[in-house]
Length: 545
Image 1 (tube, rainbow, N blue to C red):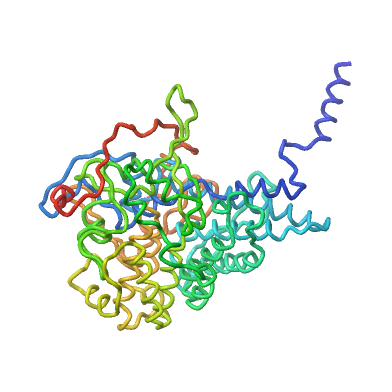
Image 2: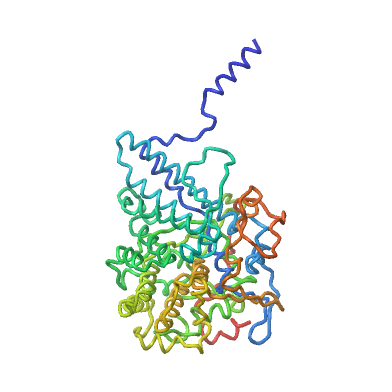
């Protein structure tokens, strides 16, 4: 009897599905699945620490003074020094970004497979299919721009490692995945974009701004072709987003400046009803904790090269568009758009996960994408109109003109006119002398617009701009435009699984000292913190140290 029971149980087991996954066999289930086709990892910290938007408060300032402040964790030290990250795989780490993006891609692939089966039954799944294709393209786009060299051109990028492009549902536990070239990766992203764009619809979303709605999809296409330097397509797709763009549809800077505290101001930035916001993406991130008052901060030259004291072609002194906050002036400041929204897992214990909502695509940034493309096409008068609209919406007091741009972006302002090494990225990427002031202007505006988002790092890579970091009391290092480390090293766990790592001249890529995967449970930011709003020019002596 016992033997019979054993064999019966075995037979029943073999005749059942080997796991408890839900069968995606209806349009409703596909739509529910697509809710999870968006990464909950943020590349903001990785991008900002790698770029010129953060400085080390432990390095000497212009007066030779420095502080002694601990970093949030060892991972921050690794990123800021452009070393391979081996100490952590929690929030904001390369592993977390990699894992979250591929999880979203796997979800999109599962949705596409379900769409194909439902279409065989006669159902129209075009909207769902469009969203899944754009999601798949977008997450591969983030991965290739984080973990690979910038796109150069189709020939040169054949020499650079791209990322594994996943276009089939996962059916094995440990499959073999090969890295394609950057050229191949971009070609496959483009194929998915062009296939998905005509299908995307706004019809079935409850809250369209948390999905790739039509405008968000076209905004993504605009950014993709900007990085690929297909200027005409940037203009074409930007036009579809910006057909009704005006000062009233761009960011409401007046309301943001009137708000009284960063924890309330954040909701004006991430308002799903705000016309400028096209796609909002909640993420698990402790980035706000870095910006508040720790070792690596938005301070000194990082402020002066963007929103502090440098002025601009249409404003004087500090950028007027939105207020900067600081817990203590000497540590630096932050914009409230990256303020933390805490998700409690245990109210009594006071623990949970820090959340930051990424404002991934906006009318504001898409307007600057179009302006940049128009500049490269030599259509300067049209570009001026876009730059002036962005400037006016940002509460700048003077109009933008050809003269104001050429008079402001001169060599005596090196923080906003860094050397452009575009031709070292690709010989085909030539910048005529007469538009160089315009390129500096658009990069300055983009730096302000995308502050804390991580996109500055991608802009530095695209134009081959060298980045210098002062590290601690004695070290100064410059990351040149052709440095291998401009491609962030893929996660150590992925290398251990057999994926080819990015080349490194001297780094030890086999260091086994890495942490655990997953989000770290923490306590919320102390609500009694007294944040200071609008650090004024008179406070510069404090923010210098």
